[in-house]
Length: 239
Image (cartoon, rainbow, N blue to C red; front, side, top):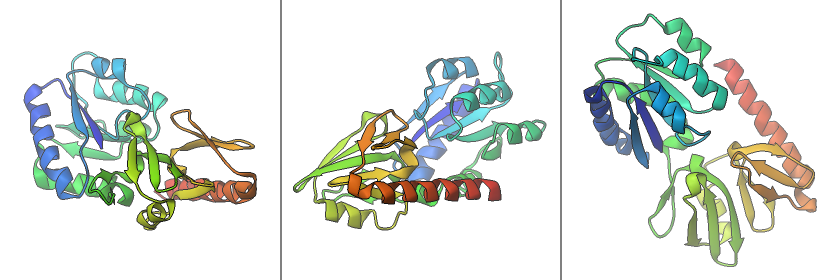
Protein backbone atom coordinates (compact mmCIF):
# COMPACT_ATOMS: atom_id res chain seq x y z
CA UNK A 1 0.00 0.00 0.00
CA UNK A 2 1.27 3.45 -0.92
CA UNK A 3 0.22 6.47 1.10
CA UNK A 4 0.46 10.23 0.63
CA UNK A 5 0.34 12.73 3.49
CA UNK A 6 -0.27 16.37 2.57
CA UNK A 7 0.16 18.84 5.42
CA UNK A 8 2.10 22.10 5.70
CA UNK A 9 3.11 21.24 9.28
CA UNK A 10 6.12 18.94 9.24
CA UNK A 11 5.59 17.68 12.79
CA UNK A 12 2.01 16.64 11.98
CA UNK A 13 3.17 14.79 8.87
CA UNK A 14 5.89 12.99 10.80
CA UNK A 15 3.51 11.98 13.61
CA UNK A 16 0.92 10.56 11.21
CA UNK A 17 3.59 8.70 9.24
CA UNK A 18 5.00 7.19 12.44
CA UNK A 19 1.59 5.92 13.55
CA UNK A 20 0.80 4.53 10.10
CA UNK A 21 4.08 2.61 9.98
CA UNK A 22 3.05 0.87 13.19
CA UNK A 23 -0.68 0.51 12.58
CA UNK A 24 -0.77 -0.87 9.03
CA UNK A 25 1.48 -3.91 9.59
CA UNK A 26 -0.55 -4.67 12.71
CA UNK A 27 -3.58 -4.97 10.44
CA UNK A 28 -1.77 -7.28 8.02
CA UNK A 29 -1.26 -4.56 5.39
CA UNK A 30 2.02 -4.41 3.51
CA UNK A 31 3.24 -0.79 3.48
CA UNK A 32 5.13 0.01 0.27
CA UNK A 33 5.90 3.59 1.18
CA UNK A 34 4.73 6.92 2.56
CA UNK A 35 5.28 10.12 0.58
CA UNK A 36 5.01 13.46 2.37
CA UNK A 37 4.00 16.76 0.74
CA UNK A 38 3.99 20.19 2.35
CA UNK A 39 1.35 21.65 0.01
CA UNK A 40 -1.56 20.68 -2.19
CA UNK A 41 0.25 22.15 -5.17
CA UNK A 42 3.37 19.99 -4.76
CA UNK A 43 1.16 16.91 -4.40
CA UNK A 44 -0.94 17.65 -7.50
CA UNK A 45 2.19 18.38 -9.51
CA UNK A 46 3.24 14.72 -9.29
CA UNK A 47 -0.07 12.91 -8.84
CA UNK A 48 -1.11 10.31 -11.42
CA UNK A 49 -4.10 7.98 -11.28
CA UNK A 50 -3.35 4.97 -9.09
CA UNK A 51 0.00 6.11 -7.70
CA UNK A 52 -1.37 6.10 -4.13
CA UNK A 53 -3.90 3.93 -2.32
CA UNK A 54 -4.76 6.39 0.49
CA UNK A 55 -4.32 10.15 0.63
CA UNK A 56 -4.33 11.92 4.02
CA UNK A 57 -5.06 15.57 3.36
CA UNK A 58 -4.98 18.52 5.78
CA UNK A 59 -7.71 21.08 5.06
CA UNK A 60 -6.11 24.24 6.45
CA UNK A 61 -2.94 24.85 4.42
CA UNK A 62 -1.23 27.84 2.90
CA UNK A 63 -1.63 28.16 -0.85
CA UNK A 64 -4.07 25.61 -2.29
CA UNK A 65 -6.23 24.48 0.64
CA UNK A 66 -7.23 20.87 1.26
CA UNK A 67 -10.74 21.15 -0.17
CA UNK A 68 -9.55 22.60 -3.48
CA UNK A 69 -6.78 20.00 -3.59
CA UNK A 70 -9.40 17.28 -3.06
CA UNK A 71 -11.60 18.66 -5.84
CA UNK A 72 -8.71 18.51 -8.31
CA UNK A 73 -7.74 15.05 -7.04
CA UNK A 74 -11.24 13.73 -7.70
CA UNK A 75 -11.11 15.03 -11.28
CA UNK A 76 -8.14 12.73 -11.81
CA UNK A 77 -9.05 9.79 -9.60
CA UNK A 78 -12.45 8.74 -8.25
CA UNK A 79 -11.16 5.59 -6.56
CA UNK A 80 -8.27 6.61 -4.30
CA UNK A 81 -9.17 6.61 -0.60
CA UNK A 82 -9.29 10.15 0.77
CA UNK A 83 -9.01 11.08 4.45
CA UNK A 84 -9.32 14.69 5.60
CA UNK A 85 -7.12 15.49 8.58
CA UNK A 86 -8.06 18.72 10.34
CA UNK A 87 -8.67 20.57 13.60
CA UNK A 88 -12.23 21.56 12.70
CA UNK A 89 -15.46 20.12 11.31
CA UNK A 90 -16.20 23.32 9.38
CA UNK A 91 -15.76 21.61 6.03
CA UNK A 92 -17.83 18.50 6.73
CA UNK A 93 -20.25 19.27 3.87
CA UNK A 94 -17.37 19.65 1.39
CA UNK A 95 -16.06 16.25 2.45
CA UNK A 96 -19.23 14.69 1.01
CA UNK A 97 -18.82 16.66 -2.21
CA UNK A 98 -15.37 15.18 -2.86
CA UNK A 99 -16.32 11.73 -1.54
CA UNK A 100 -13.94 11.76 1.40
CA UNK A 101 -13.81 8.35 3.07
CA UNK A 102 -13.11 9.65 6.57
CA UNK A 103 -12.75 12.86 8.58
CA UNK A 104 -9.85 12.52 11.03
CA UNK A 105 -9.49 15.10 13.80
CA UNK A 106 -6.11 16.38 14.96
CA UNK A 107 -4.16 15.52 16.96
CA UNK A 108 -4.06 11.96 15.61
CA UNK A 109 -3.47 9.00 17.87
CA UNK A 110 -3.12 5.28 17.21
CA UNK A 111 -6.62 4.29 18.40
CA UNK A 112 -8.33 6.95 16.27
CA UNK A 113 -6.27 6.05 13.22
CA UNK A 114 -7.00 2.32 13.64
CA UNK A 115 -10.72 3.14 13.76
CA UNK A 116 -10.35 5.14 10.55
CA UNK A 117 -8.50 2.29 8.83
CA UNK A 118 -11.25 -0.13 9.86
CA UNK A 119 -13.72 2.09 8.03
CA UNK A 120 -11.77 2.79 4.85
CA UNK A 121 -9.86 -0.42 4.17
CA UNK A 122 -11.88 -3.02 2.23
CA UNK A 123 -11.46 -6.62 3.25
CA UNK A 124 -9.18 -7.33 0.30
CA UNK A 125 -6.69 -4.71 1.52
CA UNK A 126 -6.55 -6.19 5.00
CA UNK A 127 -5.43 -9.56 3.65
CA UNK A 128 -2.44 -10.48 1.56
CA UNK A 129 -1.70 -13.19 -0.96
CA UNK A 130 1.17 -15.20 0.50
CA UNK A 131 3.32 -16.89 -2.14
CA UNK A 132 5.07 -20.19 -1.37
CA UNK A 133 8.45 -18.40 -1.17
CA UNK A 134 7.12 -16.06 1.54
CA UNK A 135 6.60 -12.96 -0.60
CA UNK A 136 3.35 -11.07 -0.12
CA UNK A 137 1.05 -9.41 -2.65
CA UNK A 138 -1.70 -6.96 -1.73
CA UNK A 139 -4.67 -8.19 -3.79
CA UNK A 140 -5.53 -4.67 -4.94
CA UNK A 141 -2.04 -4.37 -6.52
CA UNK A 142 -2.56 -7.53 -8.61
CA UNK A 143 -3.61 -6.57 -12.17
CA UNK A 144 -3.27 -9.78 -14.20
CA UNK A 145 -1.08 -12.85 -14.44
CA UNK A 146 0.20 -15.16 -17.12
CA UNK A 147 1.35 -18.73 -16.58
CA UNK A 148 3.80 -20.89 -18.53
CA UNK A 149 4.09 -24.35 -17.03
CA UNK A 150 5.20 -23.98 -13.42
CA UNK A 151 6.12 -20.32 -13.72
CA UNK A 152 3.79 -17.39 -13.06
CA UNK A 153 4.38 -13.75 -13.95
CA UNK A 154 2.11 -11.36 -12.04
CA UNK A 155 1.69 -7.86 -13.43
CA UNK A 156 1.22 -5.42 -10.54
CA UNK A 157 0.54 -1.74 -10.02
CA UNK A 158 3.48 0.68 -10.16
CA UNK A 159 5.49 -1.79 -12.27
CA UNK A 160 6.28 -3.97 -9.24
CA UNK A 161 5.83 -7.21 -11.20
CA UNK A 162 6.49 -10.57 -9.56
CA UNK A 163 7.66 -13.86 -11.07
CA UNK A 164 7.23 -17.02 -9.04
CA UNK A 165 7.58 -20.79 -9.29
CA UNK A 166 3.89 -21.60 -9.21
CA UNK A 167 1.25 -23.29 -11.33
CA UNK A 168 -1.95 -21.61 -12.43
CA UNK A 169 -3.99 -24.03 -10.32
CA UNK A 170 -1.92 -23.19 -7.25
CA UNK A 171 -2.39 -19.45 -7.85
CA UNK A 172 -6.15 -19.91 -8.26
CA UNK A 173 -6.12 -21.68 -4.90
CA UNK A 174 -4.34 -18.72 -3.28
CA UNK A 175 -6.98 -16.38 -4.74
CA UNK A 176 -9.96 -18.51 -3.74
CA UNK A 177 -10.90 -16.16 -0.88
CA UNK A 178 -11.43 -13.25 -3.29
CA UNK A 179 -14.29 -12.84 -5.75
CA UNK A 180 -12.70 -10.44 -8.25
CA UNK A 181 -10.39 -12.77 -10.19
CA UNK A 182 -11.36 -14.39 -13.49
CA UNK A 183 -9.67 -16.84 -15.84
CA UNK A 184 -10.13 -15.17 -19.23
CA UNK A 185 -7.77 -17.21 -21.37
CA UNK A 186 -5.53 -20.24 -21.01
CA UNK A 187 -2.95 -19.43 -18.36
CA UNK A 188 -4.25 -15.88 -17.80
CA UNK A 189 -6.06 -14.46 -14.75
CA UNK A 190 -7.43 -10.91 -14.52
CA UNK A 191 -8.37 -8.82 -11.50
CA UNK A 192 -11.74 -7.29 -12.43
CA UNK A 193 -11.07 -4.40 -10.05
CA UNK A 194 -8.25 -3.37 -12.40
CA UNK A 195 -10.37 -3.38 -15.58
CA UNK A 196 -11.43 -0.12 -17.23
CA UNK A 197 -13.41 -1.66 -20.10
CA UNK A 198 -13.97 -4.79 -22.18
CA UNK A 199 -13.65 -5.02 -25.98
CA UNK A 200 -14.51 -7.74 -28.47
CA UNK A 201 -11.37 -9.71 -27.62
CA UNK A 202 -9.68 -8.16 -24.57
CA UNK A 203 -9.90 -6.57 -21.17
CA UNK A 204 -8.31 -3.10 -21.02
CA UNK A 205 -6.85 -2.44 -17.57
CA UNK A 206 -6.60 0.88 -15.75
CA UNK A 207 -2.90 1.10 -16.62
CA UNK A 208 -3.67 0.63 -20.33
CA UNK A 209 -2.64 -3.03 -20.66
CA UNK A 210 -4.58 -5.22 -23.09
CA UNK A 211 -5.33 -8.66 -21.62
CA UNK A 212 -6.63 -11.18 -24.18
CA UNK A 213 -9.90 -13.09 -23.76
CA UNK A 214 -10.22 -16.43 -25.54
CA UNK A 215 -13.19 -16.98 -27.83
CA UNK A 216 -14.27 -19.91 -25.70
CA UNK A 217 -14.46 -17.73 -22.59
CA UNK A 218 -15.79 -14.52 -24.16
CA UNK A 219 -19.44 -14.94 -23.13
CA UNK A 220 -18.43 -15.98 -19.60
CA UNK A 221 -16.04 -13.02 -19.35
CA UNK A 222 -18.64 -10.49 -20.51
CA UNK A 223 -21.25 -11.84 -18.10
CA UNK A 224 -18.82 -11.94 -15.17
CA UNK A 225 -17.59 -8.40 -15.83
CA UNK A 226 -21.13 -7.00 -16.17
CA UNK A 227 -22.23 -8.63 -12.94
CA UNK A 228 -19.10 -7.40 -11.19
CA UNK A 229 -19.67 -3.79 -12.33
CA UNK A 230 -23.35 -3.85 -11.34
CA UNK A 231 -22.40 -5.25 -7.93
CA UNK A 232 -19.92 -2.41 -7.36
CA UNK A 233 -22.52 0.17 -8.40
CA UNK A 234 -25.06 -1.30 -5.96
CA UNK A 235 -22.45 -1.16 -3.19
CA UNK A 236 -21.73 2.51 -3.95
CA UNK A 237 -25.43 3.39 -3.94
CA UNK A 238 -25.92 1.59 -0.62
CA UNK A 239 -23.20 3.63 1.12
